[in-house]
Amino acid sequence: MKTLASAKTNFLIDKNNVFHLTIEHDILRGVTPKMLCWWFQNIDGEMTYQGKTYPKYLVWHPKDHIHWSLKKSSANNKIEPGSYFRIVEAFDRNMKFLIDSIELVEKLDETGMRLTRKIGKIEVFSLQHDFIKDGNNTIYKSKMIIGTSNAFWKNIFNSYVRPLIFTNEMGTAWLKHNIEEVGNFEFFLPELYGNN
Image (tube, rainbow, N blue to C red; front, side, top):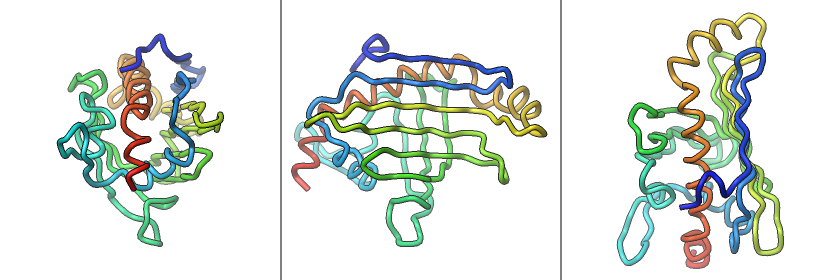
């Protein structure tokens, strides 16, 4: 898997105690934005890899990923904006960094994907992936924000709730995790896409 050093990363905690984690990944060779959009639209189910059948989600990151399911499809019964993903994973193979989250797909097209989580109407989590075409390759950038700048909720959520569900150590572990899973696309996605 690609290492932390293979990408440009930044982990900023702003004045409101909101986490901002950004990654400019190493270029994805042989992987196009069209393939990436197709992957997220077809992430469910199984695939054959090296002669054996596995859940696609486990092939994407065989060490950290535990479970993926479509909690709710869009109004069109597809994986597209309006769908909800359930994501279960343990960053850096560490159960202290376990995530079990249901997230709304706000955007999914050939330019990228955006997932969010809200408490009521207040957004407390977002993950934006940008796909930039570079010939037959993709420049892939990720930005995760955890916390809120809402005047009423920022002190409660950012200071008391967020530290219980997402620690500073988890932020560092997520950077490594995301670099590994994004880097893994090169090893299976072109062939999988070509066979479908």
